[in-house]
Length: 92
Image (cartoon, rainbow, N blue to C red; front, top):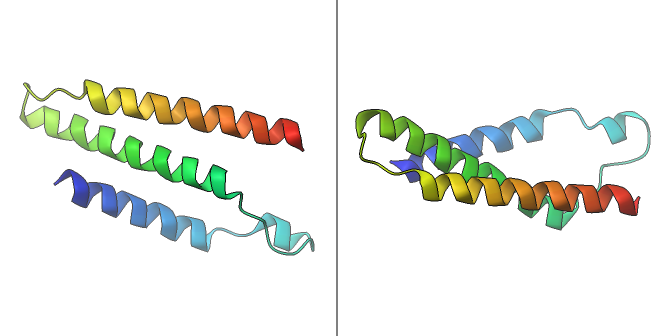
């Protein structure tokens, strides 16, 4: 169940990204360059957030379900993404 919910959330997020306007292209600078490291970190963060959210929803039906591992993974991915984003911003 968690994998299905995660896949649905990821698919929705990817669809939103593909339909979002490209601000760089709109300003005449060509297409935006996507940093592969930042993109991967973003994908990891989205996946761990989706897993954690799914665990919390399942926990409503099963009070014994422990979501601590999902929470820790989400927090680690958030910290890694934030650090990488900060590093990329200081490089530019």
